[in-house]
Image (cartoon, rainbow, N blue to C red; front, side, top):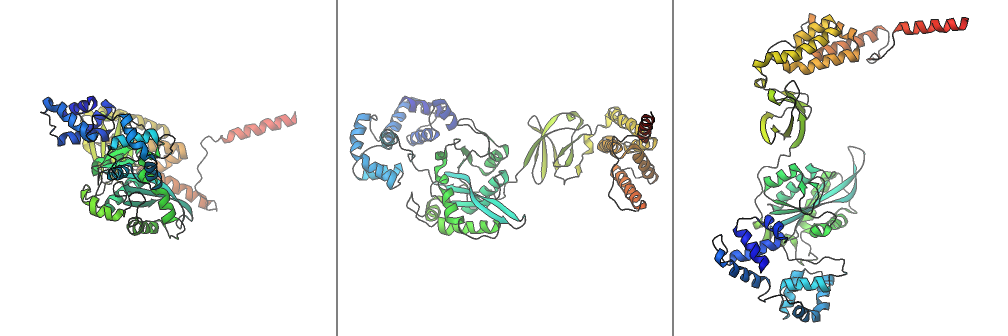
Amino acid sequence: MIEIVDVLRRQAAGDKISAIARATGMDRKTVRKYIRIAEGNGLTKETDSRIEDIAHAVFREVNGGKKADDGNSRDAMLLPHKSLIVDMLEWEDLTLTKVHMKLIRSGVETSYSSLYRFVQEHIGAGNSGTVRMAETEPGEVAEVDFGRLGYLFDNVLNRMRALHALVVTLVFSRYQYVYVTHKQDLPALIGGIEEAWEFFGGVTRRLVIDNMKAAVVKSSRYEPIFNRTFLEYSQYQGFIIDPAVARHPQGKATVERQIPYVRENFFKGEQFIDCEHVRREAVKWCTDVAGMRIHGTTRKRPRIVFEGQEKALLLPPREERFDIPKWGTVTVHPDHHIRFGNALYSLPTEYIGKKVEIRADSKLTRIYHQGAVIKTHPVVPEGKRSTDYEDYPIHKTPYAMRNCDYYINKGKEVGTNCGSFMEQLLSGDFPWSKLRQAQKLIRLSEKYGTARVEQASVRALSFSLIDVFRLERIITQAFGNEAEKGGEKRGIVVPARFGRPAEYFTKKKEEQNLGNNE
């Protein structure tokens, strides 16, 4: 009674079910059951004066109208039927709920909680199996798990590849969907679940998942940390993630038992062309074979139960599929740009040198700093850039020119013409946009030598080709022409960066001759 009153007071105070469960140490299902019964007995925020009466009504309903669960009277009632209960649980494979119903039909008047405690004390001890709890409501829970099917020859890669199955099972009806994939990564997980929602025509309110790395960053019984993208996906579709306890397969026993069934009944011994062929056949198998069999636990056909009792109670799925984003953390470059997905995106001056977070889907790239969106760009292909010239500080030209002067001086160290090329490259109203090319030009002098870059700069300036990528093409073409003049067509030979000068070998030879004469 004290525990029930505590739960109802917290509910009346506006606490959520998860918060009540953490504060009281109860299971959330128990908290939810207490609140549901109490609301049926008139619990509202204005019923503080009647809360103990309502709690007493909850207690009576939960305990089958008895004042308390007296262990002696419970055992006296159930011990004569112990062998029958064991047979129904272990041999007939019935749920505890079903056992409770059959006992009541035979005249054994006991509450479900009393039966549950009796089984734990007298049957569960030493029994490696699990005790079956009450069935979930239709449309309430789905369980998800990955399992390996076997190997399939990949005609594209010309080798055998492992094939995995993502099984999504509705706990109430036992209707399931199998998504076949070569990987167990996040896109495969979300893609398979999306396929399952389309197959079922709706979304369950809760999704029980294994502690797979694609969805759970940190596994914990009480405070798991979910993958940011998967958590965003759950909010998009409207279901709650309920991770199973690590290394505890009984937490998702409904789907856990289906992995061997899918492998043995569907995949094993069949001939498939490719992964797409397996996927098409898996849909047929889920509909016509697995969906229409007599389920070993419920003794009903899952597809019939689903269509008759569960389908109408599922949440409606979103019309558009979830656009899976990519997240990353980068530092803003002095040229006002960040690199993500081998593409460049501009940011205002005040973020230079700071770390920002990026979220990029198929359409938009959103950039965050300290949790707030600071810039949005359309997604551009690899090697391209999206630049907003308003990000450049027109009123801070001296600041920009100090960066430019540094690279101009570095260019002059390479040669006079290279310095002139660098000056023209970094001229104009927005010199920041060319800083990366300036860095590349300095690297070209280290790669091909200062003489090569100086000669190419003369040619580029004569044609007004102020582009470092065109200048590099001039250098590589010059290598090719020199190779052809030598009578052989060879690939481009890059001069050694630390090659010794010719005088070194002449001096070495003179020292050797002098030593021989002595």
